Image (cartoon, rainbow, N blue to C red; front, side, top):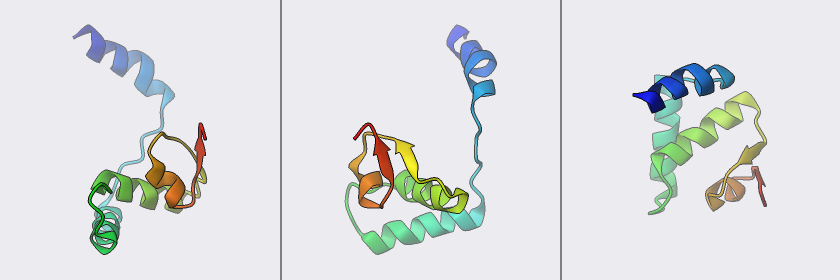
Amino acid sequence: MEAVRTLQEDILPMLHIEWVDESCHRAGVTAMLTAARRRLSLVDCVSFEVMRQLGIKTTFAFDPHFGEQGFECVPK
């Protein structure tokens, strides 16, 4: 319970959570099915969609898929 309390009270107030709507989810599913790649997840595809919608070009990620999609990854 202490970890949940810390998350709720100390960490989440510092973050902006972008909730995914139906159309964004649908676009992610379409992208995943179109790519037809085994290790490319729905979470990845929806993340790419959200980032593009918000104009985000740089990400903190160790997943090479973000770089493959044209995002600048930190660390490189």
